[in-house]
Length: 264
Image: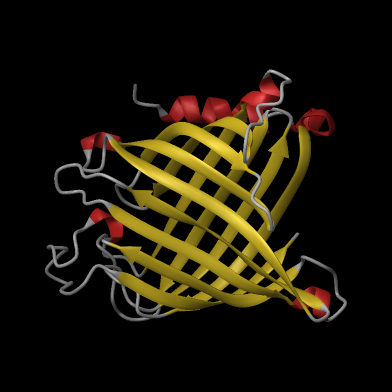
């Protein structure tokens, strides 16, 4: 059954709607703003500046991750909608069966079993709805490691409906001198095809130095580093396939951006 926007918002509302009694519902939260500058992007204009807001929080029945990218193109080039800028975001609530049933669902490396959902949104016709099983894993050395399996449905019958996506997300901290290097990120792997929507893999880690800790300004508050972005068959467009009359070339994106990130 196709998950609707209202069902995803309802699930998110269960997690995020109790601000008045947040002391009972919310266990923790973290927010951040990032600035990135990168070149050699594919399909879209090649030079981009991005400001990203991120929110992550843990609740007594699950967790929520939300982000919005605001992207400015640094050339006269425009995207498919004819704009020199764009935006994109995802809202991802997960319901924890261990917390809902007050029972430990631990076996092997699995710490918890969840119902994972994501609503993708942005400029033009990009809305998609994802739902499937999720798992929190205990892997030695990692701060966290999650693994979600999604069934994707697109809005309006666009290509990409009915395919499966595997999404791991992780964080790993390496002590370096008086501070730390954090390696975190995600991978979206669409494993099958739907007509003209090609299977694709998006690998997007960040490598960040905790400058705030090094300068004694505060731990886990200010990071500098890079974001690496590899996307094979970007947007589900097969490498060498037709994109538009304004774009000719490979759809395999392989680039890195300078990164500054502030947590609050």
